[in-house]
Image 1 (tube, rainbow, N blue to C red):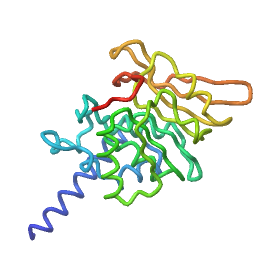
Image 2: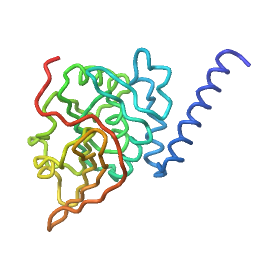
Image 3: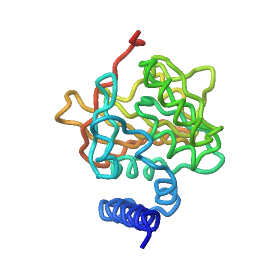
Image 4: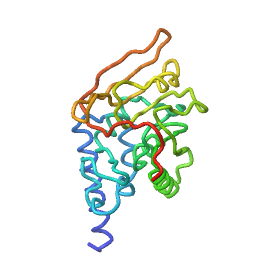
Length: 220
């Protein structure tokens, strides 16, 4: 086997292990699996941890943040039930990996982060991937994006004590929001909020651990 052939074989095996790990942890929706297969997580992990990009574990990134473990990304995306005509707001761009997954599934994705550096680096990867339906913005995500609201789907990748009121208000009737809630970084639950004509319905999905949702913009 040539060196190139060996490398292709390694990539195929790595993808197979990656997808098996996702399925074994409950990510079973075909569109979500296809999206996660098509987006190379290795593009979003730099430095010392790059060689661990394909393991099912969270990894540190710049600005004291993390890239979530792939199975959690998959489960959150699955719970969001994104349709091809949906407009999605993501609060907490981080590495950009989650937004890139959402971009495979939705008509348009707006992703906001309080760290300018993270937004800038994520935009570079989106450009490399040719993602034209993602708009990355430096902003206080706890306030959402009123100018672009309402949204069909909202995904929050940082934990608040309760679902932020501005985000609930920016969710369309019939829309879904998925986010972690909890008063500390050790006791958090992933919840799904559905907005209907009469109000909001809440489902608790699973325990999780996320960085806290912080107000304001960081001038790093």
